[in-house]
Length: 238
Image (spheres, one colour):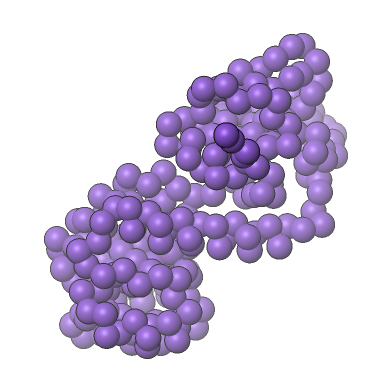
């Protein structure tokens, strides 16, 4: 799951730090970095696709709290403030977390990951009962159950959906196909691969092994995706 996020902070240095933290986090995509809440209101009026806001409180013209109060429906919000005194009031707006400056990357990541898991759970509930998709093949529509999908591979402007004994090439992006699949079962393990966790036969070092009718497929695990994979599998270790 990739989350579109914005930063709203009047302090240039604080914005820079948050921008760098977002760039280091593979599931975050920074769409805007703004110096005041007025610009953000205009952005929301344009119906921008935003999943998460990193929001300062004390800003000129309009505070972060006033900004939240102006929104009919806010996305997920993480407050990033130099003052602790606004924490209680901010939680009245259902913010996900409250970070005190200066913020370490570890604390930043923990808060962002909390949002990611929250939205994954929400998507899982919304997708409950949807157990299949239809794939266009030539002039026909083929019904494909989620349980039949082994992995999905990016190929330039296309994705290839692999089953045990077949594959389907469609004009789609990895982000778009990922949003069609139940997030508890399908996770991204590499910039070019999404796998069905239920179909994994073996994980060896940085490689996932899947069995197909033509043999075994070796799927690489990207370094930035490995921790999320380990969190999602049911791991028992000595």
